[in-house]
Amino acid sequence: MTKGKKWVLEKHFQGMPKRSDMKIVEFDIPPIKDGSVLLEAVYLSVDPYMRPYTARFPAGITMIGQQIAKVTESKNADFPVGTNVLTMAGWVSHSVSDGKELIKIPPYPKGVPLSLALGTLGMPGMTANYGFVDICAPKAGEVAVVSGAAGAVGNVVGQIAKIKGCKVIGFAGSDEKVAWLKELGFDEAFNYKTIKDLDATLKSVAPNGIDCYFDNVGGEFSSTVLSNMARLGRISCCGAISTYNDTKPLMLPAVHGTLVFKEITMKGFIISTYKDRFPEWIKEHVQWMTEGKLKYKQHVTKGFDNMFDAFMGLFSGANTGKAIVEV
Ligand SMILES: NC(=O)c1ccc[n+]([C@@H]2O[C@H](COP(=O)([O-])OP(=O)(O)OC[C@H]3O[C@@H](n4cnc5c(N)ncnc54)[C@H](OP(=O)(O)O)[C@@H]3O)[C@@H](O)[C@H]2O)c1
Image (cartoon, rainbow, N blue to C red; front, side, top):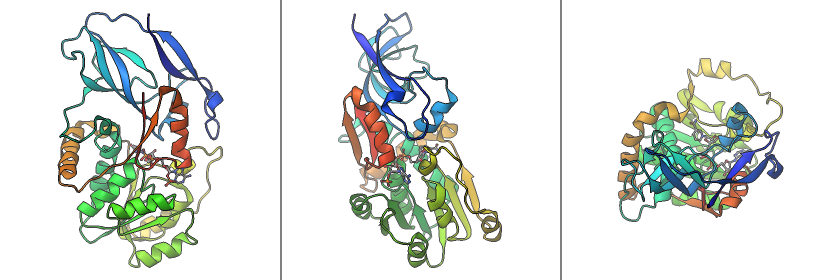
């Protein structure tokens, strides 16, 4: 009998995740019953949310996550052998499903890789679309700031902001990432690790204030952006990766006065709440890609056994664009 492999969360993460918090376990792949399919992982996603979300589950779980899998055996007529699907099976090489939670990946136009179902045409891309278009409600000519701008979500936000006619300012953690953001059409891009004074930088590129802030990082960086918002500005609170490995809550200046007197809207969201709208946004993104307005990069780590390293790359900033693991 062929063996499958899975990553088990042995211990809850404390601070930065450690390799010893997880282990790879082999298991017997069970035979499938009527109505079920056997899935083999093709690409697995590593995402920042996995760090805070694991705290909701007991130690000993199979590490959570989404993957693109291929049906390799089927006793379910809706999912014949060869079908590509999205599944939340977690960090596993093989899984059995009754089909209920599976999402079939539609055929993409020629040249668009299947793996984008985990990136620009998947959860991160949908996050960018909802979080920027619905929450920031951008108008042409407005100033938009994006943190984590060279990541899976951030790069899509910046490109949508350009499509919507904004002046787009991005922040990312290396000069190479900044160069890519400029290639994508960002009007201004900065390496937040090397700029001397964030406040002065923001005032120089957005002298009349920031209308839209798409926040991927939270923490002190975002407090400084918040203090530079324009009146009636909108903040989309997407993520707070700068705080995910903190062991003590961060104490920052109170923001309430700024929110009140500048009449700012600040909204957090979890994209799965809006999953019914994914088909509409996927169509829009495919259209923009076909028109050359929406580009992508993927950071591919090869090998199921290297999932932990790929995951940690999210916290060291190893990835430009979407981080995925190819089995
Ligand atoms: N609300 C939702 O439903 C939802 C959905 C998806 C993602 N998110 C959130 O959106 C954010 C981006 O996710 P993603 O999937 O696009 O990840 P990503 O940006 O592709 O990868 C993470 C990036 O975060 C940056 N980073 C790591 N530590 C940092 C720190 N201490 N300060 C500032 N930046 C840091 C790194 O880039 P640099 O080199 O630039 O530092 C790294 O490449 C995350 O906060 C995530 O939790 C939320």
